[in-house]
Length: 430
Image (cartoon, rainbow, N blue to C red; front, side, top):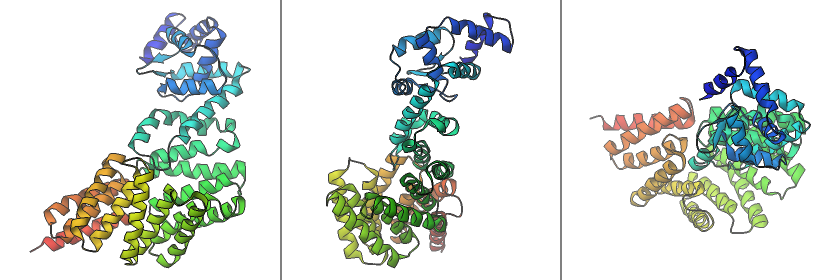
């Protein structure tokens, strides 16, 4: 246990805080230079379990070339590092403080800090835009150390990497539907980027777009729109009218208008995104499938069901051909197509799609994600429309509970789910 580390150190010197420092210094002087450098590198990590793979990545990025594992064993034997389980370690708070003082005495201190930051940037880049349970589990142990980079070691991030730790943290929480926890990281990404890179930089445009996306997920549509507009203008000016990021932002703005029922404004943006992506990426690309899906949403909302169905089926075929099985974008189109069949009264065709979408969402994000709530509500509506009230009610209740917990009482989805449940209960009254 961590307490054992201090106990062993205190046996070597007088009791009290000064005794710990004296014992630490005795141990430090017995270490070879390689072990000292490794100990100093470990002091950069947060006060949390440290996966050894992260240590190796940081050491490699710092250009340290020696037997890391052998020196790790020495640090454990010297009570400067605690071994937990499964190649995971931790440094005690007081020992970390003493090691950080030693770090500042090293000529390689800046190189170690830069290497640590580079390793954490790689972790952040490995969290995809749509993070699922698998990605969340993979990144969980690294998150405290990623937060350490942005709160303590920003100076040692180069300009190209500056926003990545913020974005990785934001995606990690966003992937869990924890939008309030994601929000400060996206906000800091934007403010930090503007402060260091200036207000007109491609990475600042990315931060604007990502914060706008989060606002859209939160139902804060009026806050999202000006950020999308700023991002679109900046990307066009800095990267040109034919850059893929232009299509991404056009699509996102079109989706915002879709959710606001501003379909006349949404359609031309969606058509522009399709034309641009096809020209840049070719006809068979996942981004084109996403574009087709989004235009189909707009047509569906306008009652243009034949056009919408054709686009949904094209999008689904492209996704099935281009993406791994159970990919989140597949779940989106399966859900959307099932929803349209439900609206059209094609209940027998709708039900298997609604069930499949719910199954995929639970598999991808667990049982308490906002996307699961949407799928639960959709299936409940299908049963409600067929008069299958006893099957619909518990699904509405589950959807409402998730929405209230994850999105809050006043989110548009929460309000919709609550209204649906109330309607069902009125319909059931004799």
